[in-house]
Length: 394
Image 1 (cartoon, rainbow, N blue to C red):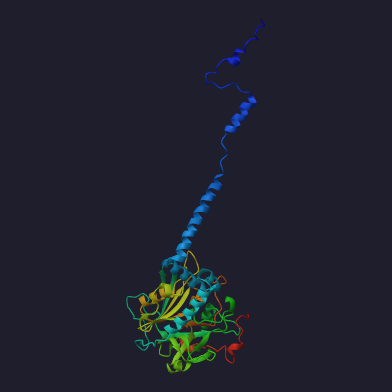
Image 2 (cartoon, rainbow, N blue to C red):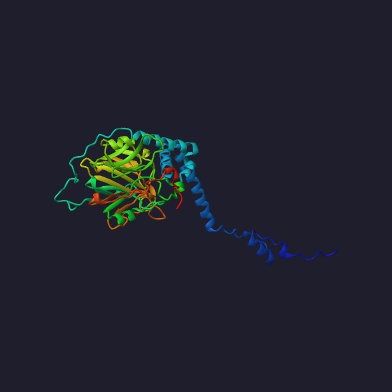
């Protein structure tokens, strides 16, 4: 009998659940396979979170902005604010090009209608002094400046107690407007604000070509009506009564107009506000508005704007309400935006104009004088035809 080979005891011995021995290389491979996959950097996790959150927020905002009544009002408020700037065309990306054209036409029509009602207000006294109060520290002062604040805006209210102390001063250089600071310094005025509008191609105009009418000391300095029978004006007659609304030249002469420029809209007439709410207030922007109290005192309201963190600007409704609260029985809009400026008797700018280029060159300014009769205002446009004036050439 052939003997059987010896048994491999180690190989045949049961393990009873214990793992079999493995070669070192195999053990290292198994350990490697069991290692967890490396985590993604925290930056990518945060990026995904922010992206998804922003996307959801954008969808919700778009739904509110375009599909809800409150979003509609905000959208048109934003569009109106752009319409008053040099970036008017940007408004079409918010409300559409057709809606933009319709909006501009709608405001033009509305402003014309707001100038139709005839003003019946009267002023008390021959030379109003704004209600002298012996306990008032400003008693006896011709002008008083106060700060005003509202929702998102800051500005100044200049009160001129005697309206007959105001003159419309015009630029003194052919081919270019003049800064109000310069007008105040060269004429010796005790205060000055910007007045009428001007042709401003691409918002780079030279400030020399006014729009509509310019009247100073009862004389027509500039007639740019171009055949129109009437125009919206803001001014003062020879008795110190403020005039604002739509008038023909003959009507103004018959009313004894003294100082006037063309601008609109009139926002207060016969003691009542014409703008119903903020949504109809022609957007948020820097503003210059002129009003008059029943005692004859003239109010100039200057609101700064387009400066986040300081003052965004105000609607015409905001301006209207401020003037009503201060007793205005008539008020009208003057040239605002980057033209808005208030200058004191030292020739210093009181407010913060929004123009990045600094104070603008303008054709006209309402200035206050202790002795207005001594002020000489030469007519720089004498002998010139409006059609021949290049508004963009410096």
